[in-house]
Amino acid sequence: MDQNQNCHKNNEFLFKVLIIGDVAVGKSSIMKRFAENVFDRKYGSTIGVDFKTKKLKLGGKAVKLQIWDTAGHERFRSITSAFYRGAHGIVLVYDVTRMETFTNIPKWLQELDLQDYNCTVKILFGNKSDLSSERDVPRETAFKYADSNNMFLFETSAKTGNSVNEAFEHLVSRMLVAFHEAESTATKPILSGDLSTCILSEQEKIIAGSGCSC
Image (cartoon, rainbow, N blue to C red; front, side, top):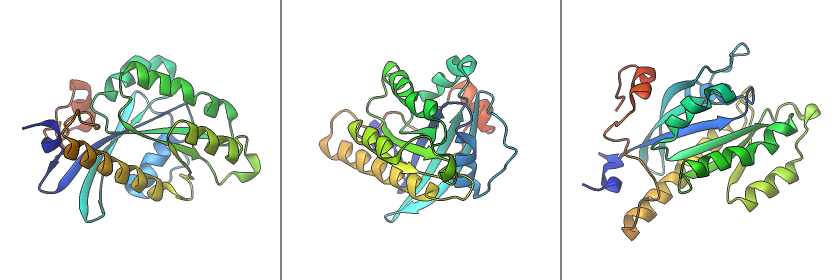
């Protein structure tokens, strides 16, 4: 059975999504807002990686997401890069109130290139949009950059929930399109990895708890 056939079972699609970006841009808060619809002001920095699942229906299809939140600290980079394996979607996050987190996005894209994940669907989140008075990254600059790199940009707020669900739903729709395009052309799969068989690394199994959450 080929990789595309393994990507879904009983019309339920299972995708692995990785959230990456600098320290304190709100990656953990975004994941928690989307997965649990809550915001925790006291959410601390992620140590290594964190993990949550989310089920949703989109376009008549049942989708289960394995969402991996990675630490932005350089000292954890060797650990978090191991979790890139098998990712179907990448969420790159910057803080609209801190220009340096935006100018570092190319570094994260370069790291993805080094991991040979050019074919994974990528999306850009400009988080903390609720802090409009503290904005440091102009909307026009950010949207122009996203367009030039063939990515969609959503300005989100983990605090208020603004655009978080819409952004993830857009990512899922693009992953579904990419999957069906790869399946119809019968070429090298656009989506890498095979999550339906839950082939996780030992590190992933420890974090996921039960090993396989299918």
